Image (cartoon, rainbow, N blue to C red; front, side):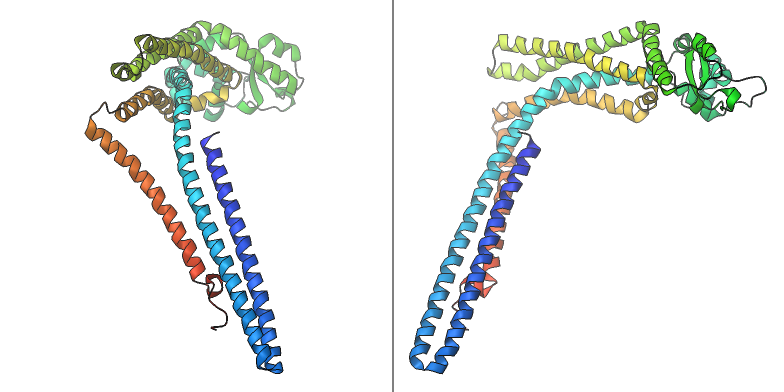
Amino acid sequence: MSLWEQAKQLADTASQHIDKAVIATTQATEELAATTAEALHQVQQAVEQGAEGLDEALGQIQQAGDRAQQTTQALTVSGLTTLQTLQETGQENARLSLEAMGKALEDWQTTIAALGTSGMVTANALKDLPRTAQELAQEMPALARRLQRAGTRLGDAPRSDADIMGLFDKIPGTSKLGASERDMRVFLSNKHGSHIQAHSKGGSNGAENVVWELGANNIRRGSATMTGGEQTYIRFYNAVDSVLKNSTTIARLGLAATGTAVLTQALVTALAYTLDLYRGDITADEFREKIVAAAVSAGIATPVFFLLLVAVMALFPEVVVVLSAPAVVVGFNALFGVGIALPIVQSMIRHVEAGGCGDEVQAQYAEAIAQGDALLQASSLEVQRWWQQWFAADPVLAGEPVGDA
């Protein structure tokens, strides 16, 4: 059960106990009100009938007050018991949640490292792409000229900078890995800037009306409007064509990502369990098994994430704008760092708990845990005081004799 599910279950349990307490309080109040009303009615009749009837009515009022007081006391004890149970349940759930969180973090360590490594290698391979038409003209002039002329006719107005970058963004991301002008020109070598709505039928030269298509297919279509099915086919064809034409770069980056992940996880795992080996908590064979298991897991998970990123970039070139953004590059680098730091932090916590850092550090750690538990205890006591004050504030709920009024 996840931490969120455990918290929700605890909240639902508390809500149920509170609902029961409110219902019981309401019933007790209604019963006391009804009994009091009946008793007052009898008092009125007794006054009319004489002293004997009055004594009987006062006795009934006293009995009603005693029953109400007993009901209120029972309700108070039940409420305090419920709060105590909730407190103990909360403490136990908190402990189990921390253990589950630690296990989940350990299970997700390889996933975080694999995703961080794949994303870091991919984002770093895209971070040097030009972001404006001016940068494109300066860094990749031949490609910029091709984007300016693709699909246009003699006498057409020049494309705007936005349309040039729009056509640049339609080049599959797999052809942009490494920010190589040559790789992108190789992809475009047999492509036309094809119009979705034909130029002869009023179609514009804007990026929204132009796709990169095999020249032979564009010529075969002539002036017919491109269908949605044809656009989907072009997207998939370009994705496969881009991967095949830039397979060397993709393979090199994939090997780099996998090798980095395997080596990193092997070293990090060795560092993370060195203290456990030193304390004797694990044997040398278990130490080696953990290193091998971490390396194998990284060697399997990293290529999977990398291939997923490659597929997304090939099919949806637009995401390259996001993946190459400086903030995303920094984010993937940070995620890679988390994959390294997480097991080392867990190792230090285990070492402190085992007393490996000395009695003083262990005492400080235990004190911090105790302070957290004391805070939970204080919160529970505050709720109990509120519960008692709530009853004491109402004379009826507090069980004060009705006859004294």
